[in-house]
Length: 192
Image (cartoon, rainbow, N blue to C red; front, side, top):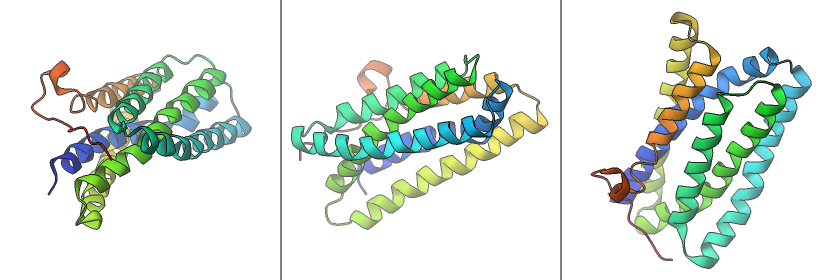
């Protein structure tokens, strides 16, 4: 099994844990800040549109340049930063901007990440993607459970939950740059 696949799986686990702590409460946050059903729909549609469009563009660009790690680190970094700003939203328009820009990070990182996984396990693509998806999905399941516990049982307010989620998202950056963070993990750079 490839070291890169495991590290990318850990990064995705943490990032999805963070994202799934925010997703269930995002409509509540929007309506609490004065947005209605239309605002919830616009924000949801914008988020997915941005991510889908940028996956194509950034995938092409990372293939062309061969610099996958910069797309990966920038994508996870942008997502983490805008999740943090989301915790300080005071109007639903802030949520529109911050949630939309958070998806820029997803669009930037997805195709280059998948290319690293494919390059890391050239003889076993299915196994590499399966391991990554299992860790990614485990983070999503845990994130949903954590937000349920924090919101319904511990009565955390929305901003605190989003702030905790942002901290978890920033922790997903540690394995990308171990020399800066003192991590034992190292995501090895790949050239196509």
